[in-house]
Length: 466
Image 1: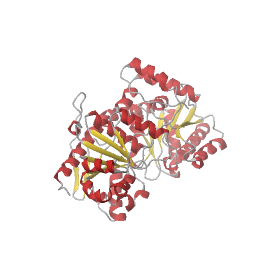
Image 2: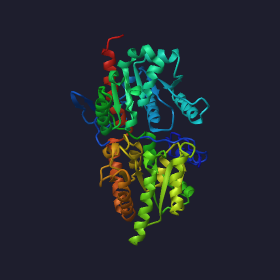
Image 3: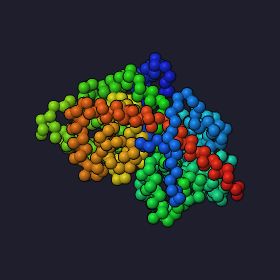
């Protein structure tokens, strides 16, 4: 595959020229960014505080303007191409845009040079974010002097003890812990033993917040801090492409040509890192079953294709080989396309007809690719689990199916439903786009985050110095 860069476009001519270059370089990175409530909720043992609906604004000042000149330290467990680190980078850029002093620390890096890390660090430095080593006096001093310290993902908690050591109590009152995980194996005290003493936790969905509240209480026997649910939003860059019909047409034509499919063919795609938890294997089973249903019922539909975006044979070669083996055994190689990890998802969202979000077990904590697909007016076929249930309204913006093997046949039937009903596809997509415009834009997310940061700063200010 080609490597995709992510330029910021302002003028249409510049944008279209950039698209030509956009497809000229090999892929190295994969961006997974990632509900219906437009409020920000605070959960505590005393109850739930629900904030007023968010105001709509265009050229109004950023809701994060109060962060000007504030010193912010962002700590990520890793700097990878998964959703958590990339979301923290977006927060870094939002804070820099209002004049905050932002520093970034990655707790765990490979010893050898990593092209992805190098590229992402350069991108941050270009945007004015200072990249610091994880250990040493400078990291400690920055943490002590910061007005706000954001720990990103559960595993970032290990940095506190590994680096700050006896200074941990000094920083906890100004720590915001941003939690993106919803899997049970993260419930380990070695990661979250300081969680009860931080200023607040910020979690991507209500279902994940409830899971953490009950899990910490019943399993770890510790108390959650005040927890704020902050639904994510689409970046301005992505929305600009999604709402530019010329750009979408150029992207659609190029991607479809590269895949060897025609404009009239139907493309059902998953855009996630390939892993068992994301459910690509079950999706392909459903896709194959849908092809059999169409043959059995003698239905007339365009040629159907499945696209898996996010492949990386070097990361999990054993699991990556399983869906390919399935495709080969079922003799559907001409119908299934595997695409390497890529920096931007926009070209593939422009090229496909339906997004499949098939995350298993507890589902996605949020699943930002879902709202990105909705921005492109794509219907979503998702599992009825996790944050997807807070984004996709079943029958209105998409269709839901169960997780696990029990969901294979329902998903197959939903694929056939959308394959045979153009009007249904378009209606679901249009409704999803309208929901994005109401709830899931960058300024919605910024407003939600601003509400949390104000309260965290107030708590830090009122806490006595140790």
